[in-house]
Length: 285
Image (cartoon, rainbow, N blue to C red; front, side, top):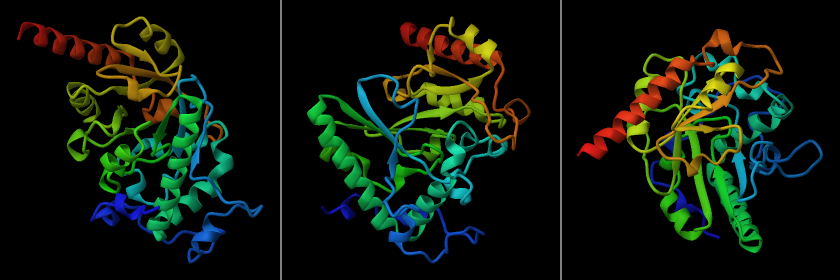
């Protein structure tokens, strides 16, 4: 299988760059060492999650990298680094795997991408037999601009039953929006976040926002709001507000409330009004 055909000419500019980091793995490890667990079995690059298993229409898998490996892994992270998703649920147990996968991508990108595409190809075949589709989320715990690394249009052409999607904090101007790759903008505490969210909505793409338990229940009654806890099928949404509940932090490095990850209900109202205004303008044109 010729997987190099999917790599774009300047893909190396957008890869995580190797940094000096104290870790039990030797930074000069071979690709085989980095892709092998302590039991001698090879890591799967694509993994599942509890949320991915909700719903029966798709086989959903994601890539989970180390968001703290280098700035390029999650370029627009701010206070969320203290209360990161990697500190919730079972995530803390897989720290070693996330680091090793990220290190392997940094040092051996061609080999890593080749394995990733082979896994996508196998899932595509499995889905064909089951009569379902595959959904791949490249950034489960990262925010790498994969569309600047891989020719997703070509990948989609070769595997038409596979959907590619992600959440991102990048402004719309820094991403290449296409029919081959669906993006959902993640709102946070940064001062331009709401402005950027509205740009995504204007493009017909959804935005995701984290609420506390009480506000989450209230927002379910709003128009143009989708319950993001039901499944992870963001690629099915257009210009909508996806509401999420803050997860329990297993390790208390941070606090969602203090870090600003939990957003006020008034921001949902503001976004809903923006969608409504867009619809009215469209009708009046």
